[in-house]
Image (cartoon, rainbow, N blue to C red):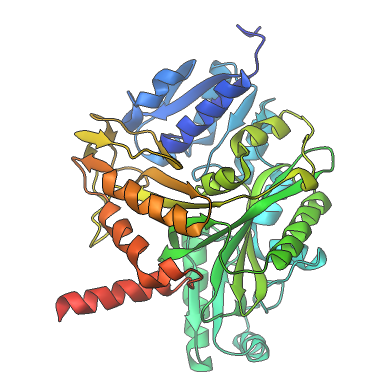
Length: 457
């Protein structure tokens, strides 16, 4: 018998998102417990949980990625639900099955839906069926015959991009400009797909030269209702990793956004999706092209929360508990503008990780400023995990005010003891292209190369 009548949420994650989930559970009146690795023993946010338990050593595959250890820990702490956060096991269908088999509820979609949408080829087929526009290219994996592959590329038109069907995070991707490159590129991409994702399947799409990365945030319940909560622009990327996100996406027709959002919501109902999720698109020349769906909470969810006034993590938990969404699409309003800067413990020039002890920490504040972080003075940044240690989110009545507040916040923010990319963010927020809005996903890489050339001149 459980020690309390309140439902218990087990947080199967660490750092900033673990603290974010703890806060949401507190507001909902739920008991919340955490798993942690040896590297995170003594992390400040653990003291805010009702209980916690060690999952294993620092290595993620022996702790946060160890399905058996996570399930056993959740059982020991009498959990009813498990929140996987983002990263780690958050999009692992085998984990979703294990949670269900253990008699607990995953705060996320069912395993079969997660598996379907996690496979880029199956997801594309589902979106085509739902009337969501996709990047030109067949909704099937590539055959092995080189001549067949060449015919597909010719039909699409060069340049094309090869992608791992089970991929993500910028891995397992290769651009091909000419037919003479195709055979080698196909072989190498299959090898990367197998190595990184355990699935050698590869698919092909048209390579867009100057697209933006635009997302649609959705929430869906188990009663047949799905809502789209707004859009985000996440085009400021380095090696497919986002640095700055904003909501709404600047300079895109709102009627077009609403049309795409409605289609995304309808597709969630069609596939039986329950939970929070994000549809990712490339946007070029006034056209949207679906690329993938993330079946979890996104790192950048705060910018959507700031412009809608919603608590997306709490909504996630509510729908997982079987509650019906009380909002309708007509109730939702997007007001103002929000910008998020990901603060990483890394060298701002070389991007090399900078683990260590945070000796001093001063968080930015003031009107419209939100800082999501699990760090405090004296805390350790482990070498074992992703280097993101904070998110600075600035809200304003319009984009100009949001950017001005973000610049002021980053001037105020101080983190000592480890290197951070705060100086880089200060430069980027003052950069003319980004300040104007609507840059492509290649803008940051080009800017970095230009800056490097000027420094070496």
